Every structure is written in structure tokens, then in C-alpha cells.
Length: 560
Image (cartoon, rainbow, N blue to C red; front, top):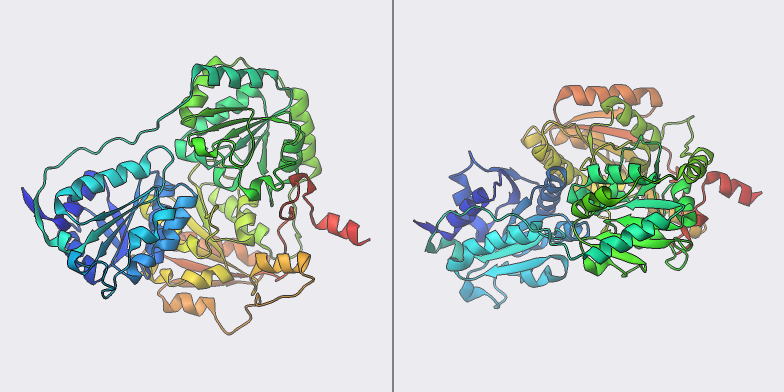
């Protein structure tokens, strides 16, 4: 049958099982929005307050569900407003398809009104980018975009379509979607070498990254750790793969990781890295990272092997597949003495905070207790992000959504909306600092428009907390443009945008506020006022060995 290009776009989305899209209309994409109008009972469109919110919502939807997130934007500034969200998804390997419409083909390259070469702009931050100038290739291009976004190491794909293509007629035949590929490139020798290293290890440590979440390998990782009798730590992106209550779990590693994880990895003789990219915030000084250990790196992306940390052995393949083979072939190990040593570090260096005042760790612990660790937590970027990673016990993957690679302030609220749309059965809570909240707080209007019952918790210290922490510790207290004392009332802003608002200034107000927000089943903002000089500890100075992690007690001893 013959359809317009715009109708073909919608039919291809239906082919791929898309039920929700996030976007903002404009002139160049009007034909697609007109076609979407005819299918609003099949594909629910969330009109965000800003295109960046749409890209973050598509990202949050994808992370929470494991499916592809879809966002739409018009040409020019509409398309460029997606860029930060696309880059966020790229850095964290999130499958997103961004569909933009451009000016008509005769106007391309002529500096036409609202014309931008968006495929060129996004080339470094997408797995692939298409510009469709011929309606006959439109359907296959969209199908390829979904295939690429999900296959191998996932990531965002851009499809830019000229407006005349969306109006042109073409024959269309429905097709079944292709299954994403997880091409593995390992050999029997690679597996043999991995098992040899594992069998020789006396003090193995497992490091779990975001690849374990993406692969759906939580069951296999837990079986592997149990069989190996090894302690386990994770990166920010690996949260939830290991049960946060497991005795062998030692918390996050890196700049704000636990002392136990940082010291344990520095003492181990074999580091088994599962789906990690060894970012600078994880490894600190690469010359000293896991210096006593041999490294076994398992990852689907061959480009990550030996990029930042030299591996003694590697297996390039889908983590779930590789661990299934290892679990089958490995004999149970016995490392009780090593586990006891690590458990001693865990007991000696627990995460702590001042219990005498309202603080973000206390708020996180109360959220954890009230939700029984079953909520989806999204975050923005900064101190609150680290506290949310440290003090909430994640027991399942895809329940901690945060911008790890790009560090995008303003990410969390849009992501929380997307997560709730994808997982309506879950309590979805965004933890954001007041600096981050200012960036995309307009998305509260999106939540109220569609009655999306998310909870926005603002950790409000009236400063840019993480930057202030660095200024305190490394810039002799020169607080250059990090103080946010002004007349903005977040509660009034939230109420003005159609949401419920609760102010919290004391510890005893925290639990009732969270319980009320959950009970209301509507979008709620909880504005929590905390001291401006609370700090995230432990901390490793940039570029220092991770074994140099220090906390408040260390600073006090140093001052003496």
C-alpha cells in the first residue's frame, strides 16, 4: 500500500513495538506529528517542556525498560536541543533513536530558516547517523536505526528526514523487526586463559560495570561471584547487578567509592572487570590502579580492552554469554581468608555521616527504608548523586538511572518521567541538587500535564555542592560563582507548575513527606534544606591512587 513518508515513520515505530515517544513539534516535523495524531491510541506521545527533556525522558525510558527510547524534534534549534541528551545516552551506552525533520531537500545547505546539519553535529556522539533524502529508503533506514541502537554495545542513533520526504508517497510493506545482535568474538583459548587466571588467583576481586546491566547478566554475575567466593564492587553504572545487602558486596569503587572497595582492589591479585570501561573517576591514577593484580577484562566492545588499563587476559563478547560458559566450566573456589580480610576492611571503614542534622544520606536512607529498596531512583549530577549511589541499597538492575559518563546536570527529572512511563508499576523518585533542578525544572509541567506520579526530591543546600566541595578542599575556599542564595522558592515554582510541594527542614519531617508523596499518586516536589558545607566522603583527589581515599576523620587528623 502507498503511504506518505510521515505515515511510514509511524508504521515503522509500530513495527518496532514502540508504545511511547517523547518530543516537541515544529514546522519541519509537522507531517510526522499529523500522522501521529491518527495513531494516538497506539503510540502515546509525551509533550515535554523542552527538547532536552524529551531526550532525557527517552533515555530514562530505555534504561528502566531495556527497550529503545524514542524522541522527536523539529529542525534547527529543536534538533540541537537534543544534543546533550544524545551525548548522555552515547556515553552510557543507552539505546535511543532520535528522529528529527529537516528543511526540504532544495533548501538544504543554503542556510535556510531553522536549518542545521544535525547529522554532522551529532556524528561524534551517536553510534550512527542517517539523513534521509529519498522516501524509498525511509522504512529500511528506520529499521536499521533500531537494529544498530540495540546491537552490540548499545547507543543512540539519529535519523534526520527532510520535510519533503515526510510528504512524499511510497509503497510500504510491514516487516517483523530484526532481533538485535550480540556478536561475540572470543575463542576457546580466551576462555581457557580466563579460567587459568581465575584458578591461580588467591585474592580475586570482581568489578561490575554498566555492561552487566545492559547484558541482563545479573543472575550470571551473582552465580559467578558465589562460585568464585570473591568480593564484589561496582561502578556507578553497575548499581543493582549485585544485591546491595550481600555480605560480599563492598560498594562503589573510585573517586567517591568506599575505602573498602578502593583498598581491596589495591590489594587483590586478580581483578575481574565485567562490562567496565575503566573511566578516570574509577581508576584514579592508572599507573597505580590494581598494581598488584593481574587483570581479566570481559566486555562486548573490543575497543575498551587495553584502552585505559592493560589487561593480562580478555574475553570480547556478550557478558551474559561469557559468564554462562565460565560458570559451567569453573570449579567452586575457596577464598574464605581473603573474604574475611575484605570483610574486616568493610567493618573498619563504613560509610558514615553526621546523625545530628538533616542531611542527604539520611534522606536517602529513609527513601530506601520506606520504598524497601524497590523504587527506581534517578539522579542529577553532583553530591546528591554520589550519596544516592552510596546510601540506597540497590537489589535489582535498572533501578539506578544516572548520567555517569557525561555528568549531565538536569538529566534526572526527564529521565524520571521516562522511567515512570516505561515502568508505571514502580515508584520513581528523582534525587537532584538545587543547582541541577534549576536547569530542567520546567519538566515538572510535563509531569503535571500528564498526571505522571513522580517524586522530585531537591537536596537544597543553596550552593553548587560538588564544585563548592572542590573549592573548599583544593581552592582555599574561593567560592567563585557557586553560591545560589536568591529569592527562588522551589515549592511555589512546583505549585505554579501544577504539582504538590512539601518543604522539609528537619529530620522528623522526612519520612512523613516521603510517605505522603507516595500516597498522593501525583507529581510531588519535596524541597529538603540541608547545610551548605556537607561533603561527600570518602574522596580521592583527581589523578591520585584510589588507595589514597580520605574522609572527614582523615582531614581532622591531618589538621592536628
